[in-house]
Each structure stands twice: as structure tokens, then as C-alpha cells.
Image (cartoon, rainbow, N blue to C red):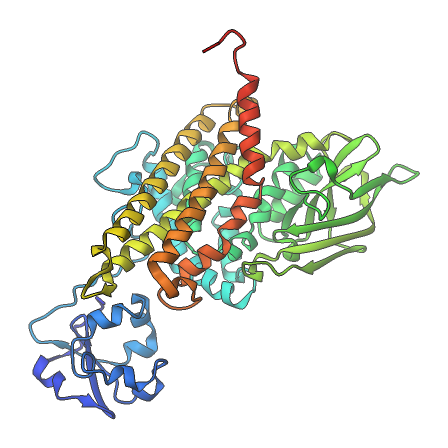
Length: 520
């Protein structure tokens, strides 16, 4: 592991070899000499591992990287064990600095690979990517891993950073809500496009915490647009400012135990009071991402003439209970009960009894955002597999020397490259279509794209576990990201529309344009 060695003394390999006993134990990892004399009995795997003939007093670099992730050596308690550097040698393993792009082949989309060019990305996209990557590496990523384990939502530091940097506003995509704002990397709100949003979503996905991601204002991404696009003033400006500034949290509450993809089957009711000043809401909502953290809920309700969407504020009659799912409770997934909740009449979002339009208007963007995250998460796992298969030794050779492993990696790489290319092609169309054109021409494309992104994620998950073996089923250590991915990737296949529903939607959209004058 490459770290500063200027203050370390020079030690010969012969000198290290003398220290190979309990209480007097040195080892070499990447040209750095570590004194484990006092640490031996504290080693999680027991001192016996350290006394092995290939470890005690020896260069244990290969053995170490077959058992531990590189970041272990950067922990303060292990940095203190360094006592010297090998005479005439330098560390060969170079960790990336915060904000750096990976040098592992196919670990980055081609537009971030120096040898390749892209017609889609301008200097502002590159500047934004660099800034968000640094933010994720230094602050959001570590917070994500800590919260995944603790089950708590994103830290106050991260939430404040998200508000002050304008990240909250940018995650809703391009629009007038960004005009006049100075954004990250000096980007002006007026020039912000869907590729900027794609960059943000994909960089956030690298934090490797699927539950954390849904608790980190994902509810805002899908719950605030109906307010932005359909609420009346002054409610609209009030709520938008509260959410963008981090004062309040919002989530989308549509799904019920009775209805998921079948939005028309919702049973939560809203009945107008006799004086017409309030709606009385009764019913339940289930699997609401971020619901435990929310102050506002964008709620789909059954009304006399159809469906109506209301903005419900947490208060009397609103109760949330944690739902434990396959991913971390950091997501804040909630079961919500509305018991005779009084909602001001002016909190209607869109036309009364016209809520289906409001709900459907959100789907394309929601699904596209999920495609961005799913495609990047899959690529992150491919990078993990490429690293592991290169450093893991089996039968005296690197794991990647096995043809069956190379075949798995070939298919994994081909799949993530295909998904990214399709995603960017759709994103380009989004940048060149207005909302009505997107609804008319891209609903099927985005539905197919999400279906394929999540199926590819499932296949990559299966192959990654096979490559990592037991480590891919272990929540800590070398395979922790693979374990988490195989446990949580299915969320994207269900949320925002199940794969089968989306596939059918895409075909039905296509058949509407099927020319009647064509035959075989």
C-alpha cells in the first residue's frame, strides 16, 4: 500500500526474517515493514495465521491481499504498526486519491476513460463528475457504509452538505427550479441537463449502500416533482424551499398492501369535509422509501371521481412504522397509517380526480434515475470482480488464469457496457425532447431499459458471488460489496414498476405505432 514513507527507517529483508516468533514478529506488506509483536494476540484470525511460514518474518503481500481489502492498512490502528521500508524498494500498490478515476479496465464508463471520446459530455459534465466523486469518496461513501451497518439514516453532515451544495435541487433534474442557482463546480442552473443528473446519480451509486441510498433523499427525487409541477402557490414555493434547504423531508406514498403496479387499485380514501375546506384521509401505505424520516407525504388517494394526489404533512393521525426488508433500515422504509387526517383543500396536487395523470407523470423520470443507479452499481461490482480475480491465488495461479472466470468476466463487462450505451442514448433523447414528447416516445424505451438493467444486475450478482465464493456471502471483508449487491439488487427490479409490468408496457407502447399496412 503506497503511503508516505519518508519518516520510516530502512530495513533489510534479512533483518525482517529474524523477527518470526510470538512476541517478536515482523512482516512485509508491499515493501512496508510492520511490527506485529504486540498485535499478534489481537489479530481477528488468531496469532496462528501470523506465525505461518509464509508470513512470519516474510513478505506477506500476496497472502495479505488474498485475505484483506487494501483500505484496512489505512486505518490508524494499523498505520501505527509500520516501522520501516525495505532497503532499496518502494511500495508498488498505489491507492486512488479522493476524486480520482479508477485505472481498472471497464471500472469507469468509457467517457471517463482517457483513450475514449464521447459526443454527450462537455467540460461541465467532467467538472461536476470530479466534484461529486470527491464528495462521495471523502464524505458520502464512508457515511453510507457506517449507516448501512448501524441502520441509521444519512448523517447530519451529509444532509447539510447535500443542501448547501445544491445537490438536493440538482437531483430533481433540469428545470426552472435550478435557474439562477450557482451549482457545484460553477455550473449554472440554466445549463444543467439530464447528463449532469446522470453523472450525479451514478457517482452517488458508487457509495455502495443500497439501503442508505433510498434513505438519502431518494423519496425527495420521486416525491417532490408532483409538488414542483402541480402544487399551487404559496404552498409550492414553501415546500420546495424547505426540502431543498434540508429543513424538511418528503417521500412518495403510493404503494399499498392492496396495490403496487396497479395504481388504479388504491384503497386509501380522501373525502371532502362538508365545508369543503379539508380532505379527510384514511388508509395505509406500505414500503414507502424514506417514510420514517419524512415530514411530508405525496399521497395517492381514491376519491369519488377517481384518484386524487394530496400533500399530507406529518401530524395528528399520521403514524409511521419501520418495515425491515433485505436492505438496511437506513432506507427508512415505512408502513404508514392515515387515521382521519385533516388535509387543507389547497394541498391538492393537480386536478381533483385527475391524480392518475400526476402519478404517471413521475414514472419516466423515476425509472430513468433507477436505470442510472442500477447500471453504475453493476459496473462497480464488475470492478470488484476484476480486482479480486487478479489478486486471488488458486492452484498456484491468479484466479483470472481460469478460463471459466475469464468467460464470466467477459459477459459481465459486455453487459455493463451495453447498458451504459443504451442509457446514454436514451438520455440524449431526453435532452432533446420536451415533456410531452418524452411521454409519447420514451415511456416504452425507458421501461425496456429498466427491465434490462435490473435483469443484467441479477445476472452480474450471480456471477460475482460465484467468483468471490464464500466471501460473496459474507457481510464483512473482501466480498462485502458483492454480498450487499446480491442481497439488495432486486429492489430495483421491483420498485418503480416490476420487470414483467415494464416489459409489457414497452411492447404495448410499440404496438400503438405498429403500421397497419405492413406484412411479412
